[in-house]
Length: 84
Image (cartoon, rainbow, N blue to C red; front, side, top):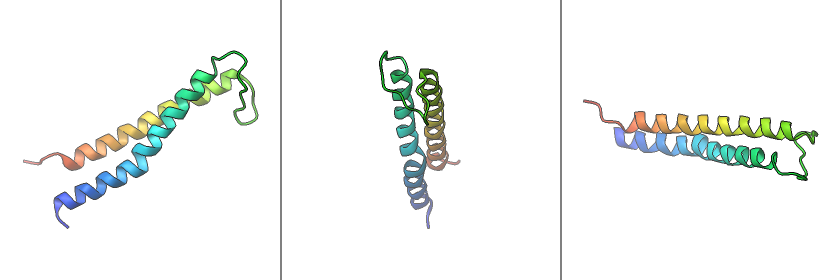
């Protein structure tokens, strides 16, 4: 397998296993964080109706999602860079 084929395979795997779940987690985290500020919202985070638990879950999901996207970006960058 040559270098370009390996780079394409690593890119597809990184996108499917890191970037897609990371973007989904970041989106859901932002959604939970925004919902925690809405008055009268029906909040149920693992059996808790406290808005602070929704905010904590949202911020945690947002941070985890961003970390996954950064991991995918670094993996893709390291594979596609040119070595001298």
